[in-house]
Length: 222
Length: 209
Image (cartoon, rainbow over all chains, first blue to last red; front, side):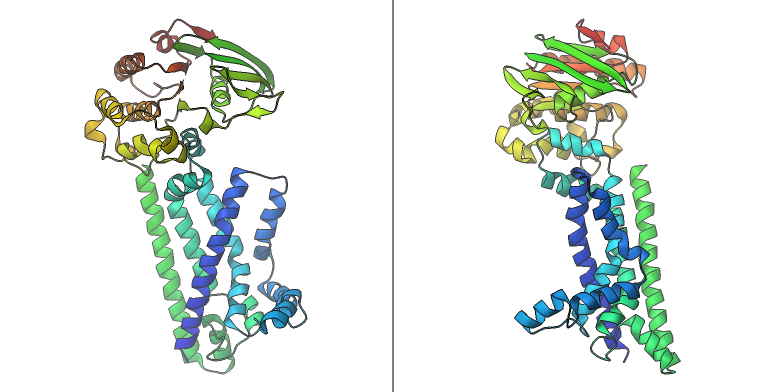
């Protein structure tokens, strides 16, 4: 009862964090290096889930991945597969919800690196990849790790969108957040409190680590 | 020989800069905000003028009319930024060796290992090689930046306010050492400063802006 929601939440949060990082890093880096006229549009698209209720995100995903959705029909036709009521669906919903946090964190971290460092590397013949690998990432790492942790924590607590897409099936798609909700609904306060305390503990550890990173970054800069 | 003839709007004022450089040292002098750094950035390929031409040894680096603009890495320039732009995540040695790690550096090569070692020794950097650059003093950081620019064996070296932030005594010593090291190379040098004495320490060829 207690184990599967924890395992599911961790799996969803880890995969969603990893994938959003891999999606956001190259896009943010490209948009900063080569700003396009539609920068505002791309950025708004990434930040949109931040201003929408998770249930709206969930509804949108249901329309897209559901039985009659564009992607849903495609998956059913060619792979005989549906992401609805699966952990994959929960991962997709979580990715969309945490995308703005990762996008903003990576952008802030990259912009915090003195641009003359990149220019110096460029004059010395470094390629954009070399600049990213040797200059940007090592100097922006604390900001990026903060982004990873915030994204992970948000992913761990994702409720609305993933409930809409993956539902709550015990042992199959239950997560910490959904298990707390349904435990309360079923009058099982003990399970709800234990899972809540666990979530709080993970959150506190993550925040302490962020504070430690901030402190260390300030020390290094001094 | 470097030939420049460029136009650029700077602070809503049109700037027309024309220069032919056939000696080793040239200085650009002017008050803050007059566009000295912008000129260096245009020469390096880090900024674009509104119109103009830059040629170096018969090679066209920039010709806005013909839509030609060689990227910075193909100009083989050494650039010492006012902020020095040392990589804070690296040691002195890693900063100096950075050029050899890059794609262009691996192809073009820069100075030989022996010459690089000699530069390190002359600039007094040997005991600092394993130290993080964030731990170095202002004068030490200035010497690292100069060494990093010179190991590229640049055709042209751009020095943007290279002695700013150093106290008078250290400034004099660093200027003297820089002049000695640069005199031993064939590299052409443009030095930008708002202080006349800094430029006069290198050359009488001064362009006022």
